[in-house]
Length: 122
Image 1 (cartoon, rainbow, N blue to C red):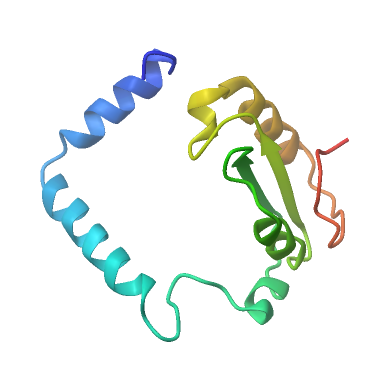
Image 2: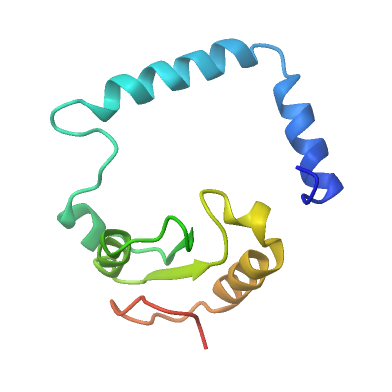
């Protein structure tokens, strides 16, 4: 957290002070552990569901976590965009500027790029 902006550190701090946070976290973790092994999987969209997404979707992954499966699944969305930035599981903590730049470009780019969806916006 020492590299995170003060506003992010403050938001994180305030979030964990919220009344009922223990129940929220406990419920979330219980569902995640149960849902991950469920049949059919509860947290994996089907190819049909991915192909039916109408809104533009940006998938940003840190280079330590990025993989071909994520890129291929993003490409199944009509307006999916896959982008790799420096870092790991939470790349915005490793390189906030790279993530912010990509999000800014994504939000400013409202046109469709079709199903290619790979690589940086230009």
